[in-house]
Length: 188
Ligand SMILES: [Zn+2]
Figure (spheres, rainbow, N blue to C red):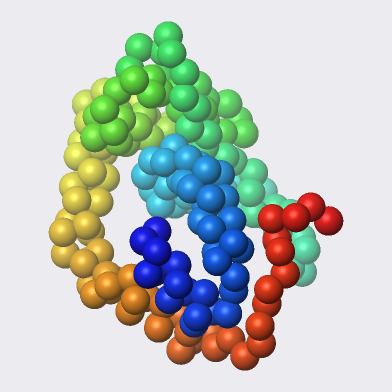
């Protein structure tokens, strides 16, 4: 981040510059690389939920308390796995989930399409229908077009005018009253 933005946050959020940079470094090196591999994660999570719901209903499981509900809620997972030697992308399915292998050498725009296509296969299987590349391509179109529309029309309405505006909005919603100058870069 720019120096003035860092200073702005130090002042507004009452943190030291060191700690501000430490958090930025963690975000850039640990969180961001994770986010970058979560292609179409809303779509992945929604399909997982759809299949998990169905499995719950099939089991006629009584969800008497929240512990039981939490334990039962995730039975099926979709993993996106980077790997070479899988052609462009390939899906392995089991009772407990699907692993979508993709070749990370593809361009990001291509990867999104390839993964959407693979998710089309997962959805077909879940619906007990014959899985075909034809259906998967239609599914890929719907998914990618849906995302595209979202980015063009909906996403801009979530955007802020500036980084400074984001800081003041955070400050207004989550006011900071006390100083925190703990050196978080030091190990406990
Ligand atoms: Zn296919």
